[in-house]
Amino acid sequence: GLYECPYCRKEFETNIQSVKCGDTKSCGCVNLRITHGLRSNKFYQTWNGMIQRCTNTNTHDYKYYGARGITVCEEWLDVSNFIAWCDLTHPNQEGYTLDRINNDKGYSPENCTWSDKTTQAINQRRMKNNKSGYVGVRYHSRDGVWTAYISVNNTRKYIGSFPTIEEAVLARD
Image (cartoon, one colour):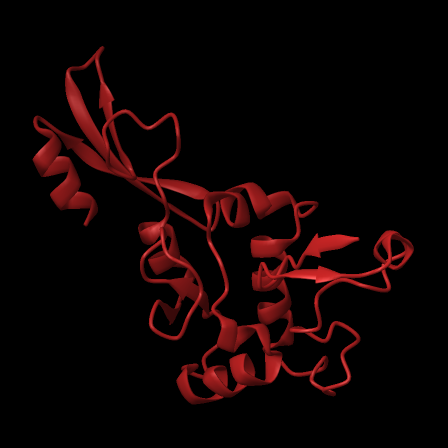
């Protein structure tokens, strides 16, 4: 039958049994049998996580990535191209992870950089229940003030209370 490749979105013909048993995972644009010898490279897990978030509907975070239209550029579907980019751009310091500059765009050399956890926390998308329109800014109706906070290492750090939303946003920035 005809199937859509989860990596490049091209339709390809294959046997349903090979899809069900996992022998066929793509049209061939990505060699998932890892014949490139790069599985032990320090950036392989970063690449694999990126691919899984954007293409694997069974991955927990797919809803925040692939389901929102976040894709991996064609060049980076080949892990060796991704690793070459990493070797040129990574700051070679512990704690830096791949970060998309524009959270509404996909993974590509033009839209990615390396950030520490604090920077990633600042750049995160607003949650669905956010009413202020700004990450880390909340209105407290009881006190009639805007509060600013930031989450670092899963701990919320209080920045302060402010009479206007503009002051709260400025303090958080």
